Image (cartoon, rainbow over all chains, first blue to last red; front, side, top):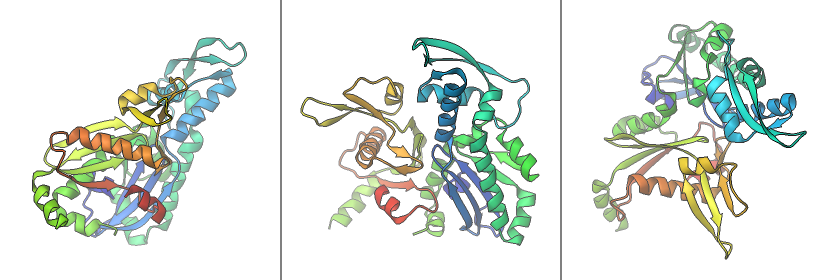
Length: 201
Length: 128
């Protein structure tokens, strides 16, 4: 909800606004109309789960242990949801499991994409379920207005492209996805009348 | 009575909006915009008497993640979008609030915190 306000969507009007907020721990999909939530679903998939998958992948393929921060760094630098052109690579430091000696390896964006594909797939799935559950009039609006992506996960390269291909709907990524929610909350504070309307309890 | 005092002091106070995220916490002050954006990480040190002392919060603590000796613990108090460690989260919020609100200790700011849609009652209690 806050993300929708922060994204400057016309939430008070009788038209549908679909927002997907991909955070660190959860991904939330919501359809909003007339300042109310028509449908919302939260799945426990987010950036942290992707870090974990990257860690497991490196451990399996290279027999090397890496830390949480390193995994996050790999994700931010080269992770993608859609084939990139050209594919990128990054150097990773960690500890070899067999010899126990710290070392360097090179990892490509293609492997990382495969490693996080499970998480990406469940995000796409959540969007698809939300679309199925939306009442027909509002679903019709989504065809015109599209889906808005926000949250840190929206920075994942190619996610908009992948969703566009899967749903053939217009997808937009907010300019500064990391701060959409807090801006929306702040806006609600500035205009108490919005707050009164959108407050859930 | 205390309500009236709060109201009077409230005039001098800033309204805060907080996005308590799993990875990052953002604070927005009414009229000033976003004033703080830091990772949701807290480093806690156990002193000789076994008490927990908060060592660092935010980006300082994030640099300590995975690089701590036995008596220091760098914790991410939020897991899967909910609060996993209640006390640590409280300490972190207090730190962030006092950071943006340092000059006026007496004044209690009005705060709005964002929670995910569809959270359970227990989780709502934890936030409060």
